[in-house]
Length: 132
Image (cartoon, rainbow, N blue to C red; front, side, top):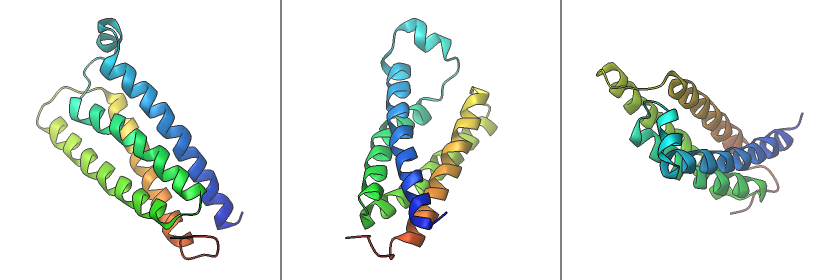
């Protein structure tokens, strides 16, 4: 598979991932009391970060689909920011803070995904077809 096809697939996945993140995060933050209670021990700063980052996921994915170099830079920013929030989550957990195990899985998935997108986009950003 060509790198451009891989990057286009990752970019499309980023848009879908972003839309799903916005919807699920919005429900968790702004849903009914019952919905929020069913989520258990959410970590507010992780929840807010993921919800707000969802909008940037869509933007980064769109930028990469359009072949814009800023999409690669935004994907790197998302990878770094996600890793920083994941580290802060780790500090929260090791400090005895309440959390849900699924948050650990979700942050692992988000971190791996954005690192992969950043690596793929930086490898492709100087290829023909990428614009400023």
